[in-house]
Length: 371
Image (cartoon, rainbow, N blue to C red):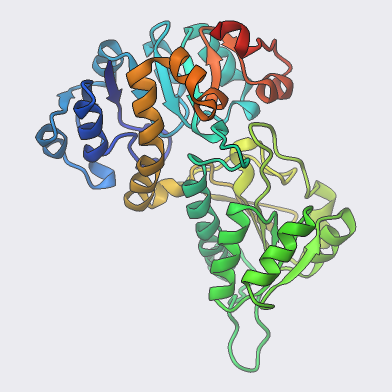
């Protein structure tokens, strides 16, 4: 199979779909690898690094799309890329279709086979190709939130760790999964006063245990959410529903409960956001203010640390990518349920139920296509 990757063109997205090491692995499996000129530079990889591993450099994204059977990306295709796809071409990337009807319909028109990193699921319910980016986004959420709490950026002017004789900043984290746990690690490390909320008693027990009483845990109820919003300086939205839109836990009317200059970081923005006033922002213009509350809603947070995030992403996506390339989509899905759960689009049909339900479009049962 011919495998390719192109330069990411989403605003301030510096990651790349394939590292030279990943290219080497595909080539070792008998495949050909094509890289758009300069695609890896911002993540620390030169064209010559790919060439040394047997990759071939092509000048433009048009050249790559026209040549390859499988495109490996990081972010969802942008409008200028829609016309470049060929029917039956495999797209292996983050898609986040449940929050984007236009993207879904455009990709259905292309007739591609779209495999989404974020819906690939292990038997225990964990998401192996989403986990490393969730870890990074969780850690960045506190790092960025702390910055935008500074007065110069519109924040309250609070130092999360405080100083002797002055109270520490208060951080509330909505959701105790991978994002929330990593946000908690960073906030505790900075010395903040941290409260984490979740709907699972077992998860709250686990978090209370691993943080050794250094945090407060609360059941995620409407009352408890309102109470933490009143007192928090920084609120992290870290809620995920697999493949579906995130629930709106923070409503517009809740903003009036919050302190002027408090900061909301909505890590769930890729899935529509768990804050009602969320809309996607970019690293170029990361924040906006509503009712005196600073919103940070960057939809590709890990893109700001491309060296770390590209290596972490490739380490988890490569093994499944090799199976897809070696066997083709149908056989790979038949033999591996993780890949099967990643398949969202198949030659014009939506085959992932939660996406179809969220967008109100026709759903086609995948098993009927794999017979």
